[in-house]
Length: 300
Image 1 (cartoon, one colour):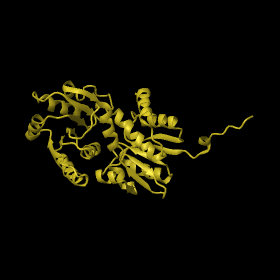
Image 2: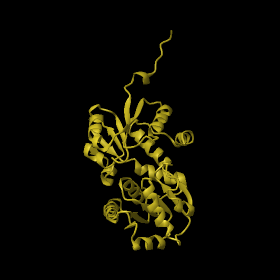
Image 3: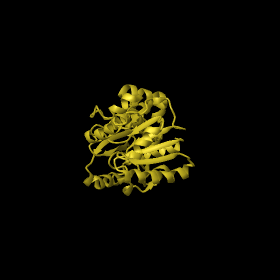
Image 4: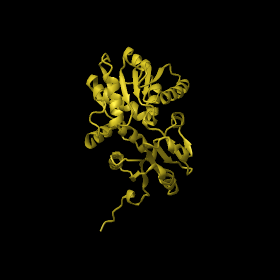
């Protein structure tokens, strides 16, 4: 009998997975499993749904086991900074990590592949780039940081941050002004709370090309956002609406904005593009665009 030889059967697996809370909906294991098959690597990807009080122990256990890498999702993208040995330049600037990797020296380094994922997703979904665009960001939490950095990096002209907490929106704006200096950007950035009269005036006076929602879908957040824009009877039509969430649980979420948009896209393509970058960090293999489209068609 001829001996079967397959190097992948004997090579140590790349043990990876995703850390988050209430993430049973996550498609990351499916995506990475598909990429693993297509690119013929030896990656093993799991799901670690960890409550906040156990995150420190769980992530330190991941490191103690010497696992190759992890994706980090809500609500731990900033919390994980405490347990990472070093950061990529972009992750350090943004202050959020969605990918951890075991480096050759045995340390764990944090990366943020959401930045590239968002830029590529906008191009894929709308056939548009961000250079010279006017953009509204809804939300000022951890997810908004990568989106805002991507907008500044890719040359957006005007950016308006609106958030339930005006203070948090203002803090993010102040950080973004520092990012502007390092990226040599001239972007105009404003920030307001939902109930601010100045926010309403700014929304109505601008010609916005893209509206990006970074708020996690819920009945409460849907009511707040829909009430805000439903009250703006003269709000212009003709923008692209990008919702970074891909949850379909709240069907009415952003429905007022969708009625006036040219096209609405959810976060599935962003999820895939950032996953491709994470996969490359762990394995040294990156899927080309034809493979990416195949994954989109098969999985989604």
